[in-house]
Length: 302
Image 1 (cartoon, one colour):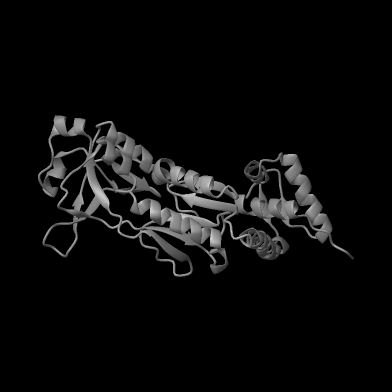
Image 2: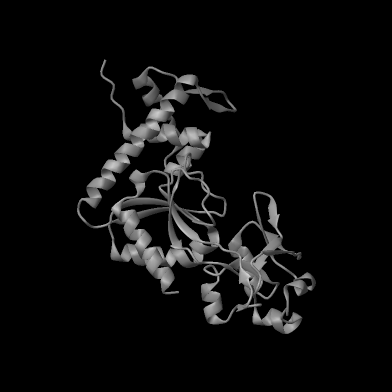
């Protein structure tokens, strides 16, 4: 029996499995739930298998669905890889890049850098996810991620963009006028420190490297504001509401314009290198390498 599979039906199946919801998959694909449901039914009909067990309140993969999901993912990956290979055969960057990036850096720095890259290479298209929660590259539809920090997952390919980037301690001129400039790390205890939270963990222990010391010093801070969005913490600092401890890259425009000033400049902040991360070696395409080089050049010009 000849089986005819449609690419869009496979896509609906994988997205539904990832989202755990047909309606969520439909929204992500920008199609109607009815169209998504029809695609799933058509795929099940062609395969002669029941891929999902459905009730009025839940949707879960059957055993057959779990096994078929592995092959469906691989089929979609290979098709995309084939498409990108054809695009790159033209020696001009092109194709669709699905990129995950952190909120503050994404909105205020990378957005403009990616615009410049696309203006130079119009054949490149983006699908961008902006969040401070680290994308699960094994489950989410992401080709590359731009991430801060040391990359501990040895199964991922991490390419440095800003290897020497560090955190800096900052406040606005208005805050400094009202509350003074701390003369030492010990004085942070009397200041309102703006904290960042991720995965319900509040990052209120700030690590520094004082001059003449090879050992890090961690200072416990407190304040009246905390957010799980790094962009919001930066905005609070610019508004004069407290002291922030953030990646210097995130703050580059605010420091250049004078909206924020570095406090205790002789004290070295915590390292926050920036990497471009891929899951498979096959994803390190000429377009991705060109983007990496472009982002590196932009950083070096900051």
